[in-house]
Structure formats: C-alpha cells, structure tokens
Image (cartoon, rainbow over the protein chains, first blue to last red):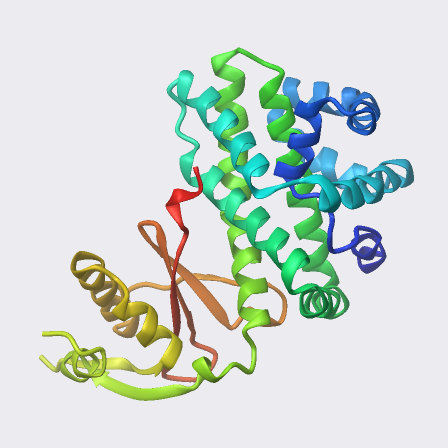
Length: 219
Length: 87
C-alpha cells in the first residue's frame, strides 16, 4: 500500500515552493487546489502539530492525489528557480518580521526543491530511475518522504494565512522538525545519484591525526 | 595516551576535493569533527532507504557525510555546503 501511494505521486511532484508559487499567482488551477485544501489548512492553522497527520490522510485521498499530479505537470512547465527563491524570501521575511528564526529550514527546503527541479530539467532519466528504485526498495521511507513534503507544504500555506506570532512560532517549530528529516532525503538522493562515480573511490587511509593531516595536505 | 583513532578513516577523492575547497576556519572545524567521529565521540543521523549506512553530521552550514557500515572503518564520503546564497 505504501509503495502504491508513493508511486501515485510521480517524481516531478510539486515541491513546496512550486506549489506556493502557484498559490501566490492565484492561477485557476491553484485556486481549485486551495479551495479543496481549505478545511485542511484551517485544521493545520488551528493545530500546527497536526500537519503530519493531515498529510498522511491526504495521501489516502484520491481526489487530492489527482490534483497533485496535475499540479506536478503545471509546476514543471511553469515554475522557475527565481520564482522559487522569491517565494522563500517572502516566507523568510514574514517570519523574520515576527522575530522567528526559520533560516535553516528555508535553506533546507529550497536546497531540496532546487536540486530536484534541476534534476527533472537536466538529468531526468537518471533521476527518475533512481527515484523509482528508491520507492520500490524502500516503500516505507518513500511514503514518509511524501508525507513530509505535503506536511511542509500545508504548514507553509498556513503561514501565509496568519499574523499571529504564537501560531507562526508553532508553525516554525513544526517546519524545523520536518526539515531536519527532509535534509536526510535530499542527501540520500544526491548520494544515490552519485553511486559508482570515480570520485567515490578511496584514495588514502589514516589511522591517526598526523596521517589524516598528511592526506588532506594541511599544516 | 595513544593518538591512534578507534576507527581507521578511508578518504574518498570526493571528500578530499571538497575539503580542499573549504576556508581555513572550516577546515579546522571539519578536522575536529572528524577526530571526534574517529574516536567514537560523536555520530550522525542515518540517511534513508538502502543508504542508511551513510550518515550526516552538521557542521554549521556544511554536512559531513560518511559511512560506518564496515566494522572499525569510517568512509569519509563528502562535505557538502548548503549553499547559503539561496535566500
């Protein structure tokens, strides 16, 4: 079941920034998406800690998954790196206005989104093959990855809907927790795509500090 | 007291290349973290799926990626910047 859900979200699934970009542009597609998500966003706004649970429920919702697949195609065709950066600048500034530090998390999400976006644009067949391999071999982790992406997306949309410092603080705390794990997925995918590269070969070993410094050519 | 590491370190070409690109201060921080790792004073968070043998340790905006899946061996894979110029 988990692998089926993960496969239902195709690899060019919309990253949080691409979705937010569409939300801010208020295109017809995203207005429909937001309308569908409205009760879920309200729930997350009311209780930010429930974002993960809401995301899990949405992964069992066929209509939501259909909308997500359509959005994924739209995102790949229309989103640009500058738009993605602008969206995060906007969110970063909003939290900063309330003296809430979310810089690390924003960087982690943007790193994930930009890296994935570039893979889809420039390295599609290798990326898709790596991702499908990941889904087939590790369906539980693939499902968790989808849950994190959707939970982060819900929290980011919710953050645009409030001016309460308390709510934004709770949202930031959840985003920080989820992005710590998101970073592990980004690094996993990066390492997976670098598999079998010449640069991975061991060129030296060291058993003490002196040997290590010698290998790394430092004083 | 012996200065031998508890694990032997196996350095990849990728790690060395990334290390050489760091500034002096960051090189020092990485060396300190690697020492802690090799003396078993710290450990990282495992990556996902079949890459669970690889782990992440944060050093500021950098991530040290290594593998300890072989007994008494630490494979130093890479040091990767988070590219802070994103925002």
